Image (cartoon, rainbow, N blue to C red; front, side):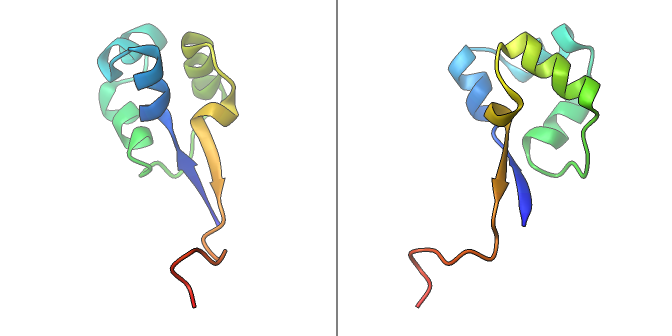
Length: 76
């Protein structure tokens, strides 16, 4: 089980760059990049709240649950 990040999709849908989001929410580009690439191990609720407020979205628009153990079309 893991949490996937769809920040790049939401940014694309909103026509906003990572740099612009960084400036608006007060989080460094480096930290947002770590989040966007799925390499972050955690996110503060205050950061998630600021991102969602700025992007006018819900946390579920940015984060998704990925069941790594679920069979997919390529399994037996």
